[in-house]
Image (cartoon, rainbow, N blue to C red; front, side):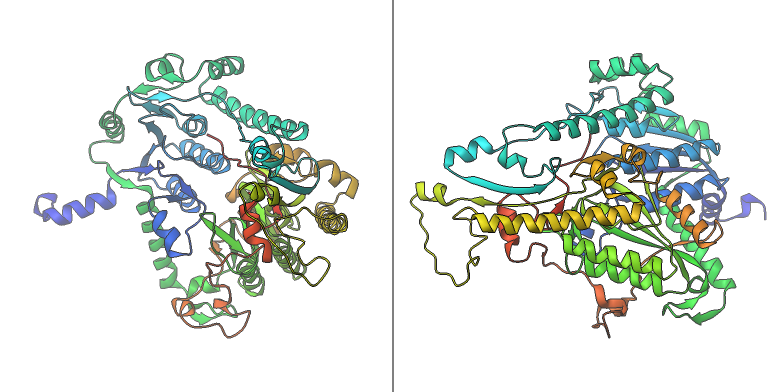
Length: 583
């Protein structure tokens, strides 16, 4: 039928299905590691892109002849360094496939640091900056506030025991500045991350490495100066950016959000499989057509501070992983005849020792049962986050992943004198020599300190012994790189704590190879409960609904509230010290 005889709505529909595509993505609200399971977190993060979906969409776009360009808006809420490195790799692959890649921002910072956002922008072939914007390329700074002086003024003390000198979480309450080991560790982290950012800027912007260092020392930059130094390509507003992209892509090009593009491709793929595959019911209980009968790689997200029990919303904000939930997911995948390997995606600063050990055990059992386990580390996989990773067949991390922190600490505030100055007194009745051991009114006694130190010695020995077992190292070798020290993924790889540098795609490729699967084998998120499983109680501890989310925190047991008041995490003693986000 001639185009002139086609009704206008049908003509528009045909154009949308055949015209060149310009994909766009807005990352100013940040990126989520995965979709939240609880409704509160889901509402709060509804505008955030999800990292695995972004990576899947960019992979599909590489092979789609209709896709001509990707436009990304950057410069808003912070994104984790490892996630940025994963995205950079995917964007470069897209550009290598012949697609135009354009990054634009109204500002990279605006009176604040914008190093990591700009680092992401350098992966794109062209960078636009609004004329009124600026580029906060200032280098990496890591600052902590110390409260020791304030505690002394009010007569309060804080007792802490740790294994070993680099486990510095409580130093904000016990010191007046960085201790020697903490400064050494933090300085190396900042240097490693700065090296990674400088190398990328030098390569992508065709600048000498020493010039990049000088530019960082001269930043931040107004838009015009940033362009003059070759750090951005064009100055312009949003309409000018899109006008230039449309001119390059052609007048008939259709603009579409990357998320909508990915969902459309995914639905079309499922429809094709459903039309060609037989219907049946596998041992896993996944009913329906074809996809349930194809061999897959199970993808399990282990995200947030680690606590005993079920995953849920963290009392400190955000989500937390529960040992019951993650363990049930690993068991489900290991028992599913269609899941031939497991990719455990870890993004956690740690938490409860007991909960971490519970998850570690399920990783060991899955491997013993013949299911390969590959860990993909996200922005942070340290302390308890490293504990649950160390038994895997292979550990993959990004160069900027924060990992290690193999150590343990505990402590309590001593507030008796401070409260006494305010006229607050207490009295005590107890049965049992150590019944009031965790009282905030008095310090530990000598024999109580002995009990605390025995506990820490046991945890540290168990932790390092399992690292040695999982990584094929001697305990002295482990101790040399442990002692509570935090490493970047690049430094950890040099020291044997990590096997390879890369992202989720690389971990999935390793898992497929170990399981003897083709490169096209799908990643499938586990657990995959049916809607009815969310409403009815599970039939056993191994049922689909056995690990529903919870809102109740539990990691320190009876001293949970004490830990929170003391400035320690409610989630437990295997927690990464301090905050490790970079801008």
